[in-house]
Length: 368
Image (tube, helix red, strand yellow):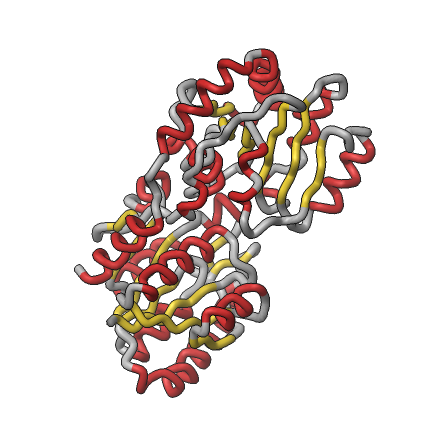
């Protein structure tokens, strides 16, 4: 059984954390790995690890990306991560850890710690920090990629879109491990149209997810029997609520609390929206499609690798609100066509991105 030290960054499980925790839970259950965790702070992730009985440590390690490059601060962050790595070396040196697994490309802490522990290091790159979050690396980007390649045993990524981008920076092979999507999503939607055409948006309410575009799209439907439910939390939630109130469309757009088990409610919707500017995998689209929901999505990131445009969904150029409106109205008027597209969406990902397939591929890659 391989002993793996996983380093996770977010205090609350979102896409990246949910994906790796799903893999870990499966591989632990069949006794392929023995996981230990280092997380940055307390939160829902800590509660999850306690509930599962996993060994974990909390440490405020630093990132090697920031909003604005500052050489002095970069050196300070590197110094503190070195100190933290030395501390964890003395805590963990007797545990005989086989791998240190960094589930992001936004910090050097795991890489440094692996050198002290003399363990093999794995980078699982799930983001483009500059494009997605407007962040910049603390040091010259080329040097960061070179050092990461030199001192990492394996480099993994989770989508074809990221794979194509990362090939420019790494010489060694990059392994594609698609995110697992809970098998409970693999259930065909019954498509009940008796009342309203119900549309869903699931995502963090932050700038990259483009939540204010929802206002532009749905303010046109004041006289239509259409409803949008928005599931998510984030820094823009209050402002979004104010804009909905100002436009007097609270009867059309409903803000809902975030749901951990979103698969329980997807059966109530016919169309799903994804407006993000840059999504490097976009598990939400897969969850929609595996549930038989037609998807309208921004033509960017990994979305074109998931959606066959005009066959099982639609890719909207430059997030054009008018084009979203046209497609919604088209399906509002033609339920038969909506059923056809929804069935095609369901068929594409039925029995794909399963927890078993993703987890076992990850295990095989680690052990090659």
